[in-house]
Length: 283
Image (cartoon, rainbow, N blue to C red; front, side, top):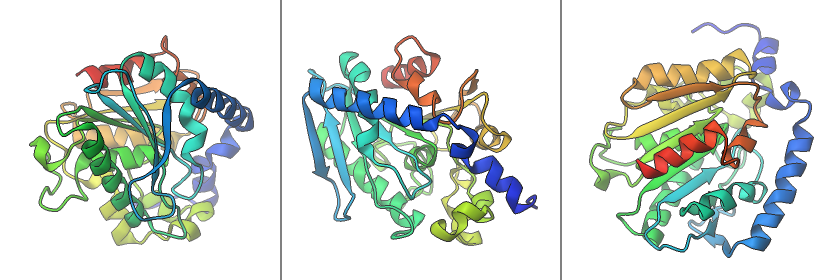
């Protein structure tokens, strides 16, 4: 696929530049996350792997056999931290779900291959902690959306080849991608990302969920802000086409939302995005 000039790619994928009010979103999330940790019983910084940032925060519901809502943060695999996103936990815990926030090591200290393996380790740890029969829904924003789709695909699990029709081969039941990245080839050519991500033609192809076989028996919901760039919108719609409507029954643009403020809807019980997340927990 030929790509336009590098400046166009930077403009398409630099979500912070396209959302000049993003510092206000970050400040709002930080305050709400501090409040969430103060009001909810939580176990913080539990280690699920050997890497420096292989840590998870767990906010547990009253019912031990409740479904688990996993949230994986974005930051282009090279930034951000789970502590900023605890604000999503209270509404799901009150609705009867466990919430787990996952951190992972960051580029350029590690590669996206390494991060994908870490997310698989996190999912195995979560399944062990909450029980093999517990329903697990993995959600993620931006690069976290990529990792949610990766986890659902089962591509990193030996012997599955992307066919995760049997639960025994992959404990993830469903996933939610919020402004996710599912075709990594453009990012290989995007100047502000290329040096840190160190993608090659081979790794971009291998790590792109849109290039993996549809995960049979699973469901993926893809949402993106209606006011995001053409490329972010294309990313979600491309995955929906590749995996098909049986796997991706919902691919929606959320009106009047951009790359960051769309996450406010995840924690809003009256918002469409929150309703979609709840539907995956119940399915």
